Image (tube, rainbow, N blue to C red; front, top):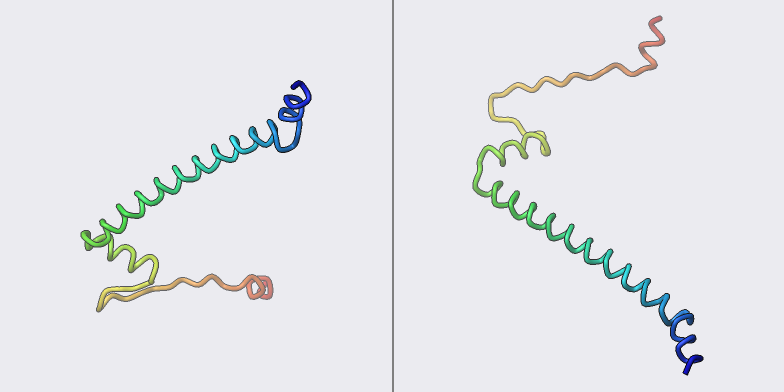
Length: 88
C-alpha cells in the first residue's frame, strides 16, 4: 500500500502533474476573464460607433485620415537628418 501511495505522490503522473494542472487551470481562468472584459469593451465600442456620429467621425479622421469636404489639410514633414548635417 505504501508503495502505491509513494508512486502516486512522487511519480511524474501523480501529485506534481496535479499541481501543474491546477496552475494551468488558474491561468486559463484568468485569460478567459481578460477576454470577457475585452469582449464587453469591444461590444460597447461597436454600439457607440453605430449610434454616435461624433465617434464615427473621430475614427474616420484618426484611423483613415479622412477629412470633410472643403477642409484643407496641412502636413508638416521634418527634413531628413542627412540634409541638416550637410548644411552645417
